[in-house]
Image (cartoon, rainbow, N blue to C red; front, side, top):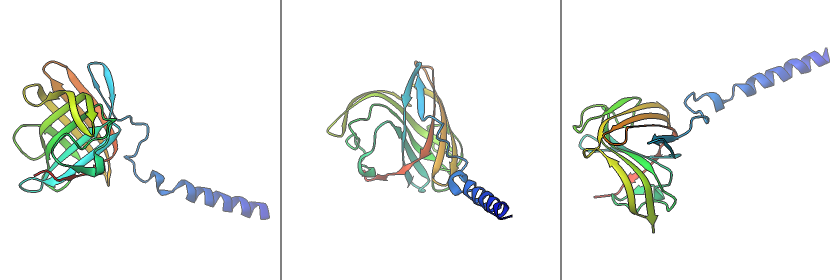
Length: 190
């Protein structure tokens, strides 16, 4: 009888332990690789940053998906805010939503600011950083090269899954995913 009580107690402890908060957030999946594929090459983007709530109605966001870092979580509007290990990334600029913050939903590239749109997209590869400044890179931009882009956002608290597809004139379709937190970054540019 004593062994049965011990066994029941052990089962209760295991049950409570298995229901811990580690699995309460369904969006966290460490098996999702944060990367994009361009012309058959896989580019890692393990770091995500966001500048939130700017613009006329405080309803715009910019998302940086990078293999390096934005230093001190401060962006001054110039290419001198990055870690020296930065070599590639994607920037979704002026993402517009009807509410503050980047919300779950599908955002489409459209150069006019409408609800759930992205005004500008930049894909950067072969970035060279010296003294925290970008001195060169190869870029694909919205200025004539990108014809269509879609960003699907799934948000659970501060965790995100961002799936994106970017159609270009000369480089085919760039597909990618980012999974993780977006580190809040201040825009200190004037």
